[in-house]
Each structure stands twice: as C-alpha cells, then as structure tokens.
Length: 289
Image (cartoon, rainbow, N blue to C red):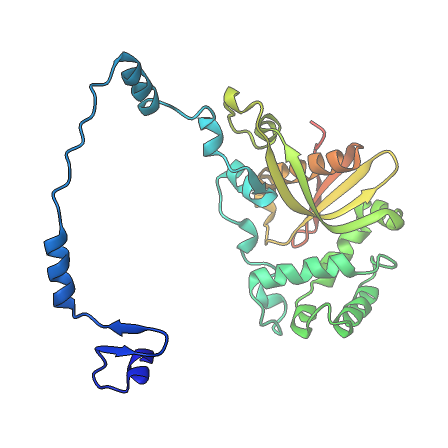
C-alpha cells in the first residue's frame, strides 16, 4: 500500500522516489527465475565408519536415563492426593455433608457446606465455644465481618460444633487456646521411604536419594513448647457402621500432617485426633508410629 501511494500509479508495479526505486515482480516471473536458477546439488560422500564410531553410535542409541524410577513419581504432591493414593479412592468429602433436610434454608452444595464449617471453625472464638448460643453469636459476627455469607451461616450445624468443643479433646484444646493455630498451610520435604511407610506403597531402591515436596493445610493444632497436638475435622456424612472404615481411610492423611509439623517445628506430635462432625465422634490416631 505504501508503494502504491508513493508511485501515484495504478497498478504500481514500479516506482521511484528521491531515495529509492522498486519493481514488483509477478509470481510467475519469480517461479520461472527460481526454476532456472536451480543447480544440481553435489553428492556428499561419507567415509566408512570405523569401530570407534560404531561404538559411540551404539552407546547413544542404547542410552538409558539413570533415574528412570524418579520419572514415575511426582516431585511435588498434596496431602489429599497422597491420601487418595493410599486408599485408591475418590474424594470422600464430596459426599453429602450435613444433608439439606437438617436445614431447609440451604442453597449450598455439599462441598460448599463443608467449606462453611471449616471457615467457621477457623475463625470462631474459643471462649464459650461449647455453648450453642455463643456459637450462634459468633456466626452473626462472622457474617457481619464478611467472613461467612448468610447462606453459609444458615447451614452451620452448631450443635455438632459445640459437641466437639465439649468433648475431652475439645476441652483440652480450649484450655490451651493461646497456643492454637488454625488452617495452617505448610510445605514439607519427605523422602520416598517416609511416604511409603505412611501411605503403604512400595518404593524402589533407586529412589533412596530422591525427595518429594508435600503441601497441605492443617485444620487445627496446638503448638506447645515440647509437643504438638493435632486435630483434623471431617465434614462428610458418616454412619456409625462406616466409622472404622473412614478412620482407616483418613489416618494416613493425619499422619502426613503430623510428620510435616514435626519437621517444621522440630518437636513431636504427641496427640492426634480425627473428628467427624456429623457423627459427633472424636477418634484418636497413633501418629507417632
């Protein structure tokens, strides 16, 4: 377009300005010139390879990566993914959580209802946490502070929450409220052997020098000078007969949390609990083994 404007001709196949001149060649002209200018290429002769050349070629073609075992395992994982790997399962917490018949006001999904309970447990004041009336007041406060929505506050099972704080574990934790940490995101380094012991999977000897970065979020723990107490809340609906299987499913997850916190804070986790809100049951887990 620029050439056409400068030449003042239509069509502008050629033109000239004080500083340059040009001519636009047709495609057929270019094709003819290229065809005529082609010359036969000289044949390249390669010498006959000697024994050393064959040896190098064979070594190149048969080379194998020295860390093949490491390529089959992710270098970074989450606690949830490792727990699923241990149980070979889908996400249990996607199951119905505090079914809708408990509160006709809810418009939230099962997963959102579980999230609402975790947010409430993260931010609720532990003072008078064993009283439903105090928890109701906390729900109002958290809604006013835009931490919870009205729909999230509506689905909270405050009786179930109060039941935990009135349990032996809950009361023990409340007595140490100044040392309570909640919803702590962490990153920790594990050897494949450590993970294998926790999630009961086989590890190749070739993986001894490798490591895996594990990320997770601990629901609640009590950080004391010489020890740590840990609790993980489960919001999926659990019947009495299902409880042993659920405990077995979630135990590796709690053990991973325990090992990670022990690494980070350089002190042992001496108390571990799984608490099922819907069943109002607190189950101790042996995390030190």
